[in-house]
Structure formats: C-alpha cells, structure tokens
Amino acid sequence: MDEYTFSHRCITETIEGLQEGLIHFSGPSRTAVIYSIKPNDPIYIHDPQNLLAGHEPKFKELYIDTDRWRKKTTLCYDKKKFSNLIPVKNLELAGLISYGGRSSSVDYQMWFTEHHPDMCAIGPTERWLEQAVWRLSHDVANESDLYTGISGSFLKEYATHAVRDYLVDEMNVLIGWDTRVRVYPILEAVLKISRTPEEGAWPKGKLIFVEKHSLSKMKFIAKFPKTEQPVLENVKHIRKLLQSVENSDRKLVADEKTIIGIIKGDNPDFSITADFKGRYGFLKLNENTLCSFSDGSFKSTTRKAKLVQVEEALLDSDMDPVDASTLFKIITGIVHSAARQRHGCTIVVDLNEAPIFISGQTLENSLDLENHDDLELAKSLSKVDGALHIGSDLKLHGFACLLDGKYIPGENRARGARFNSALRFTAEHDNIIVIVVSSDAPVSVMMGGIVLEIKIKLKPSIFYNVPVLLKKWVTSSETSYY
Image (cartoon, rainbow, N blue to C red; front, side):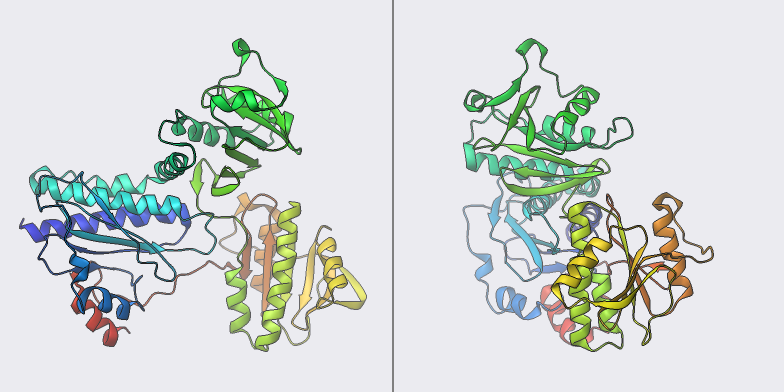
C-alpha cells in the first residue's frame, strides 16, 4: 500500500468512527476534515455528506488563494513522531464546530462537525475532534505495517472520555493543575445511579461533588462520620440516600469516593453537580450545564423540545406564513410548559379548513390562543387526561379529547397508550399533526401514521467516500451538486 493510499484509508476509517460516536452523543451528525500530510503537499478534503457545502468561498480564501495556512512552526516533518501536537484555532464557521492541529507526522488537519442548536455545551464535542487529530497523527506515524485500525472504534465509544476531558480542562482553568479530583469515578457513579430505580421510581435530586479542602467551609445540615460515609461504589445505597433530597433544595455532597452529608442552599466555589430528573438528568460544572445523561450514557442535548418537525410541517402546509409562525409559537409554549411541570400531554393540530370532530370536552366559545389569558388556560387544560384540539384558526376547540383508530404497523408497545393512540389517529385523518409530550421522554411528533424524524437535508456528494484535492472540491461544488 503506497503512502497516500494508506493516509486516505486512515482518514476514511477515522471519520466513520467519529461520525458514529457523535450520532449517539448528539443525534444525526456529519463529519468532515481538511488536511495536508507533508509540509509541501497539496491540501485535501474528505466530506462524504457535504457538511461543508456552502462554505466553498471561505475555504477558497483560506486555503487556495493564499498559502498563509502553511505558516512555519517549530515542528519538523518526522513520521515517527506524533505526540508534539500544536493546536490550530477553530475557523468559527456558522453552524459548525471545528478543531485542528499540526504535528510532525501530519502537517495540517482541521476537523468539522455540526453545531446542533440544542447542545448544552460544545466543549465535549471539541474534545472529540481534538482526539481525532491525535488519532490520525498516531496512525499516520505508525505506517501501514503497524496500523491497527482501532481509531474508528475508539472514537465511536468516546462520549464519556470527551465529557471527562472537557471537565479536566475546565477544572485546570478554575482551580489549577494541582487538583486531586478524579473525574472518571464521578462519571461512572452518575451513570450507574441514573439507571438504578428504587421501588420502581427513577432517581431525582441533586448530588454534588466537591474538593476535600472545600468541606470545612460548607454548612452541612447533616453530616456522616468518616467511618460511616457511604462509598460511591455502593450504588444502591447512594440511590436510597438520594431520596432524602428529592423535590427539595437540599443536596447530597460527595468527594470522588464517599458521600459526606447533606447541604442546603448555594454550592461552594467549585462543584460538579449531577441533577437527576427521573429517567434523565444533567451534569453541571458550577452553574454551567455540560451535558445530559439518559439510558446509561451521556448526551449533548438540552432535552428541550425544538419541534423542528412541527415547524417544517406548518411551513409546508397551506396556512398563511404569519399564522403558521404564530401557531408554532403557541404550540411551543404549551409543550415547554408541560415539560417544565413534568406532566404528559397530547396536542392535536388540525390544519383542515373546518376542524374535524373529535370526541371530548367541547367549548361553547373556542379559546383565542393569541390571547395571553386564553393561552395560559390552555396550558392548564393540557394537564387533563386527553388531548387539546387546536385549529389552524389559532383557537382551542376542545380538550380531554379521546384519540382512537385501528392498529397500524410501526406501533411501539413500549411507548404506552398515549403514544400509540395518537399514531393510530393520525393514520386515519388527513392534515392532522399530533404532538405527544411524555413526562420523562423526548417529544414525539406524528403525521400520517408515522413519527416524524428530524432530517438533515443532504445534497449527494459527488466524491462520496474518497478524499479529494480541496481545489477540485471547491471548483466542482460550485457547479456539480444535483
């Protein structure tokens, strides 16, 4: 295998593993890289799903019209070295997260992925891209005879490591390099507790982790003797103790090994907080949310419903664009209210010219949802069993509505009656969108008997799985997308 074929293989396998990992962490994601192996090599791009489409003028300006990107460093090209990596400032392109670097084995590389609007923080994703820089430098340095091909698999499973690396970087800035807080045991404990029910109930409440030197400054309302402090490894015991701070402003306090006691009020100057909210939760550094967690893994999402599918369906409908925008704001307000108050609800959005009949509690006069008081009443009515019935006239026509229908393929028995009844109902009625808000799961949007998914709109790449010269990509991209 010649030198360039090998480097292209490393790129392809790294980018595939990186993408798979980010999909699990952030949802549908694309990845791309711009790179040059040797100091005088031309610059290449590998962008199999056109993540970078639309940025051609900027890349032409940065990499083709000038060679300033080849700025000299103290590094000398040496395929046997890869650990002396120098970071390259991200390009700060709209809608993208990027991270780059230079090393002795790879002269220049810049990795990209999507900046999803519902990310808690981009830091963990940046650390993920940084790891891709390290892995590629390592693989190219090893050459084909020693190539193991594990970089893709490593990056695929990097979520917990990405969160840990970001935490460590931030801790070093906040409290210095000499901190003794070990992050991995904390993250492991959080994930184990999150998936441990107690008498059928999922964990709720806050568990904060602090440095030992902070303990003497904290005002405990209850503190355990050193010889009786519960160890974090005893997950079932910790899960039981968490009940003592559930639905309150009290918090369990721990270092990375044991539970120290319970406090009330403000956290110390430095803390890592696991805020358990049932089947999911959030991880925070001081007051800054880093990520969420659910199903035993970390996620980038804020878990706030973006309702992109609803917005797209309304814009594709025959509604006046201004009315469609107003209706979307009304729906978003009701959904977010239900999420904040942690109660499930169902909303039927009826886009028919005359609203269909739905069995339920009708109103003598429909509520005008453009009126603040009527909208607030609708939010309260969403707590009542059954669905809200909202028309394209921006009015609430009924509540406590019963949705029914015949069995359809694609039902999910694990999601319960509310979900499946709504799915059946949309299969039997045209111009109907149903939004199902669960108290402990993401919002589901249905239309035509299917669950609408957020889709990344892709233009097919003319260079699917092959790295190409950036100059060729820029030229072809301007004329050849179809």
